[in-house]
Length: 445
Image (cartoon, rainbow, N blue to C red; front, side, top):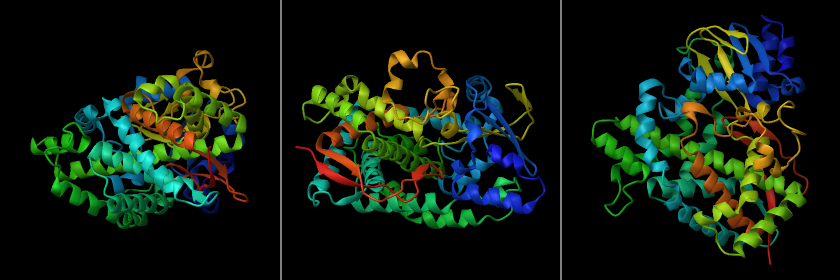
C-alpha cells in the first residue's frame, strides 16, 4: 500500500483491481518512493483500514508494549493457514504460548547443531566439486536444498534425500501458488471460497506424505532425545498436543526453518558478487580466522565480518519482508487512531531502507553493523526476525547456520553472477528472486 495507492479513487473497482493485481504479483512493488521517508502511512482499501508503521516507537508499541492487542492479521492467516495450519506462526493466545514453551528447548543448545550445518555444507560442496568449472548454478535452489537438509537432520533426525526433495518441491509450489487475492485484500468474509486454499492443499500434498511417514515411524531409541520431533511426540503422548498440532508444527518448522535462511544466504551471494571490495574483506577474515579449515561453533566469535555480511544482506533483502497485525481493540499508534479490526503493517522491506534511519540506505555496507555504528541506531528499525514475544524462535539457530554456511562455501568457491540475467526481488510469502539467481562457480586455489 504505497503512497501511489493514495491516488486510487475509493469505490472505483478498476483502480482497486489494478492494485490487487500488483500486490498479488509482488507485494513490495506496491510501495512508492516516498514510503521510504514517512513514519506513518494511512491507507483505506475499500472498507479495509491500514496503517503502515515505519517509526521505531510505533513498531515497539505494536510488537512489544501492546503486543497483546495485536494478533496475526486475517491477511497473514489467509496466506499461511491453508498450508501451515495452526502452528507457531499462525496460532494465538494460550495455544501459541503452550506451543512456544514446548518447542523452545530444541532451539536452546545451538552449538550441538554446528557440525550438522558444516557436514551438510561439505556434502553440497562435494556435489559442486564434480561439476564442470564455471558451469551455471541456480544458487537459490542450492541454498534451499542445503538448508532443508540441515533442518531435517537437526530438528527431525532424518535426511532421506528423496523426502528432502519432496519437501523442497512442495514448499516452492506453495510459495508460487498461494497468494492473496481480491477477496483477501479488500477484507471480504472468510467463508467465501478461495482458490488459494485448493492450491495450498495440492502444493503441500508431498510434504504431508513425508511428514505422515515421519510421524508413523517415529524415531529410533538412539536418536537425540532433544531434537524437535521427539519433543513434539512426547507432548502428543502426554496429551498436550493433538496429532494435527504435531503435524502443523512440523510443517511450520520445515517451511519457515529453511526457507528464510536459504534466501538470506542467497542474497548475500548476490551482494558479494556485486561488491568485490566486501568480498575481499570477507576472504581476508576467513584466511585469518580459519586458514582453510572447516569452521565450527567456537569460530563464530572470530567471524564478525562474515556475520555482518549476513546482517546487511537481511537489511537490504529481508526474507520476512512484511509483518501483518490486526488490532483487537481500539488503539493509538504514534498519534494515529487504530480502530479495532484495523490492519497494521510493519514492513522490513521499507523500514530497512528508510532514509531517516539509515545512511545511504541503498548501499551494501556490512560495516554499518559494527558495534560502534550500531550503538546510535534505534533498536526497532532492524527486524530481520521480528521483535517482542513473537520474535522468531529460531533466530539464533538461523544466524549460526547462515554464518557457517557462508564461511564454509566461500573458502572453497567464489560465486559470480552469470552474464545477462536480471535479478529482481519479489515479495511472496518470503522475499525471493523472481527468476532465480544463476551464478558461476569459480574454485578457489
